[in-house]
Amino acid sequence: MMEFFSQHFAWMLDPTVLARQTLAGVSNGMLLFLISAGLSLIFGVQRILNFAHGVLFMLGAFVAVSLSAQWGESGAMFAWVLLAATVVLALVGGLIEWGLLRRIYSAPHEFQLLITFALVFIMGDVVKLIWGNEDRSMTAPQALSGAAQTLGITFPNYRLFLIFTGVVVAVALWVLLHKTRWGIFIRAATNDRAMLGALGVNTRWLYTSVFALGSALSGLGGALAAPVVSVGPGLHVQIIIDAFVVVVIGGMGSVMGALVASLLVGVINAYGVLAFPGWSVVMTFVCMAVVLIVRPWGLFGSPE
Amino acid sequence: MTAHRKWAALVCTLLVLLPWSLSDFWIFIAIEVLAFALYAMSFNLLLGFGGMLSFGHAAFFGVGAYSAAIFFKRSGLDVEWMFTLAPLVAMAVSAAMAGMIGFFSVRRSGIYFSMLTFAFQMLLFTVAMKASGLTGGDDGITGLKPPGTLGTPMGYYWYALAWCLPCVYLLHRLVHSPFGLTLRALKDDPMRVQYVGVHVRQHQWVAFVISAACAGLAGALFAFSTGNVFPSWLNWTASATPVVMAVLGGVQSFYGPAVGAAVYVVLEVMISGKTEYWPLAMGIIIVLLVLLMPTGLVGRLKKVDT
Image 1 (cartoon, rainbow over the protein chains, first blue to last red):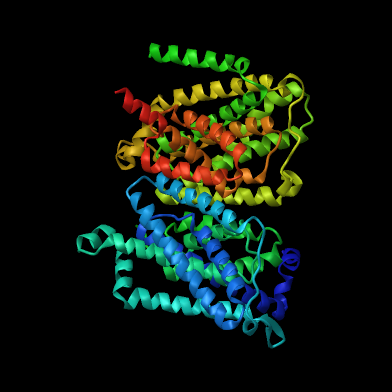
Image 2 (cartoon, helix red, strand yellow; image 1 turned 90 degrees about the vertical axis):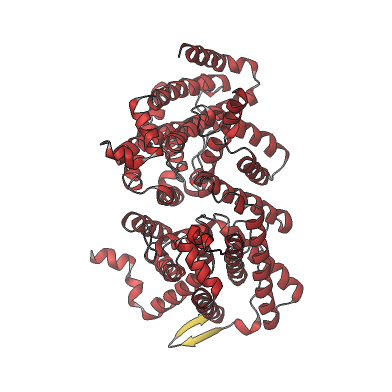
């Protein structure tokens, strides 16, 4: 037992390493939150598991890389790049919902699954057609590079910026869902779509807007991730799996659940890299399987 | 029933005679069709007859392929024994794996069943990637071509057919047995079937294990035909393949998925020979299929019939 501990968890005794891994996990978790919040909202409202959500994230990253190459890498321009990627992805998402998804809401599960898979294949290849096969990279603006020194721990500024942005988005989403009429409709739709329609709410428009919102969040996530990952056509593969794990653990349809589970999965991954090198992914899948078996509606979801 | 038997005998005869009319390349494709037809039919036992949408069926195809490959590399048996036993080993390991995964998965229904099977598939994918001592990791296992007559396209075709036909026959018997009828009733209304006194989970679990054994056999046959196994066979993009094949052929019919598998494999060969954007083409085909032809090819033909 002691041997097992010293082999896998001895690094935890070093406060510097522990703090560094925790912060890294939290900042990755915030990126994960951006993509899984949208995934969760869309599942809650439309009851569709959107496998294409990772491709939207990738698209956001590619848009950001291209725009920042055009517009330059100053701090102000970076803000515009983030905004532009968000808006572009909102439009793409709205278009997908309007053109495709709204035709299959009453179809069996396997058709909905196939359509979102088809979107993965189509958009994955479209990205290759536009941007080619090579990995691209993008540098963070000067103002956000460098590192902060606290208590002997070095932490990259950009990671702190990611955490800050994640908190801002989480608060904004909370306000949107709880203080605006639109947000009330979204929460009502998560509860009972038919009843909401019967009360005279235009659910078609609501669905389009929710999908656009989810896509926009994913695009923002991709744009924010662009400076810290290599942006290539395989970017969506891992992120969508992590997002699924998050949504299942947090509870499908719950934004709060997505936030908590994102941070959890981010930190588990960051610890797992040191504790069980190469096997940390297994830990998140085991978490997911356990949650599905014990509490299938997730930590913050409600049973149907 | 006799008419049905005559048709079956005719199709079997044609399948046996088929390789004489094909070039080596197309015999190779025919072998792939056999393996994937069995795979898609085993998947449809769950979806079309049991109403269980498994997102993780590729796991059992992959486990079958890997266990046959590892058996091939490690057992040190001579050729006859090897190729008599390897498919059985693949079926047994896949069934055992499905026994465990199914035990947990059938406890949940609908989308949660799909997600659970999906989670287990990703777990196995990670194992295939990381346990490189056993599975070769990223590179997979290569050099699995059988020697001698079995290594020729024609010889291997008959070998694969000799495994597939009995398996399909058993699946057919199963679907039309009282067990199969119960399974179909479960799809329509699990609650009522439970009232009659049927052990719902047990039936679903048995169907899950049988289906996985057939998928494992398909995986093993395909692995020996291409000579390789890769971890990508277990990756999440692979879970769509049996679903596409089944829906393409039509999930309401027993033979539909086999037709879907044949069309899918031939399309893949023709399109990916011309362009590297086969996924794009497949995506468009799926969209058209779902929007325009939701009952599948066989469902469509049947409609024209009546």
